[in-house]
Image (cartoon, rainbow, N blue to C red):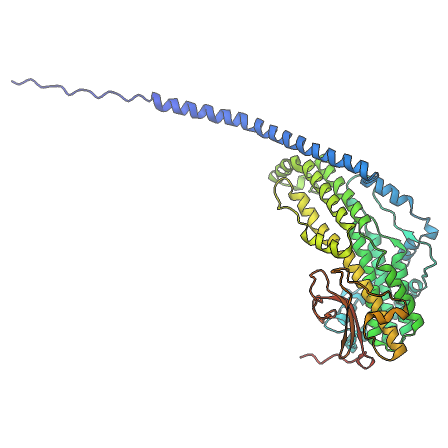
Length: 482
């Protein structure tokens, strides 16, 4: 009988090594969970401290170079110059606007009808008779207010609106008065259009001049929105003058001369620098208050989700650095504004903002539209005013000599300076004789001469300027629409 050999029993695997790595991983994870918030908190503190140092240095520099630059100081200085109500021509305009009729049907309001009249129509063409008749039906109800506005004279004391900010969120600043002045100018523009259509050129031009006086009677500082409203009011005046001369060939020299002088003066009387100073203070105040959690991106904290509120708290660490970044960029813009016009245009085209990142995204976002305003608004306004003044002088020349001037230097007998320069490129202001009239124009910010295209049926013209038509090409019928 043979003996059986027992097979060896395999040794049992020990889980010791596996559990050792499990414990190590758990310990590392616990350590990471414990240390990561501390590291993040430390980084946030360091980011805030670094940004605050930059902001303190930037504000100290402004305190030395530009005392009274903060929003509270600007508001106090501005409001200290507000004249009493009885001699404040700005408040007078607002009071007149408050008495104007209210449009019950927006689609049949004068402003909607004006929009239809001006759409797809060249200035020298008559409007659609149906739209014009519908607009004229509104005129008698509005005429008393128009008479009040047109009787405003340059002798009226200069006015100013109070800057309604008494602390708290800068977002609560009231701007309704600016809208009221724009409404007043729109009413005067309509009144001028009414008389120009009736062939009363001198009355239409006198109303346009009243609108320019009204605009100058109001100090729109100190933020960009108000500045743009002011420039928009002057554009309405220019359009009224252009429309009158596009329809009427018989304006008196006595009605044209004061408008020409006023436009020349206006070309240098609307600097953007005060509004840039106010916008800088406004932006700084908003960022500082957001950093202190005194204002938020939400109207009510409960309206933001938990994730959004956490993101907001995370981004607060970058606010001091972004405030310093914005102040530095405003200083750079202010330095560019003192350059001569052509150099200023080139400098603004070369000046760029950095790409947005987590440390400057708010500053870059807020500054980008500011740069577009600063870079072009004042220069384009000056170009428009110079072209309008030269265009009026050309009309005076035609009325006296029976023909258009051969060149702009021929206008010196009407008080125009020689060698008028285009603010955009420093070259002589462009002037062209056309088959149906003449045009004075600037190349605009692109620096390209597009042949004096300053009037288009649709879209924005490629050049900035003033168009004049031969007498036989004024108030012609609109071409038949397909």
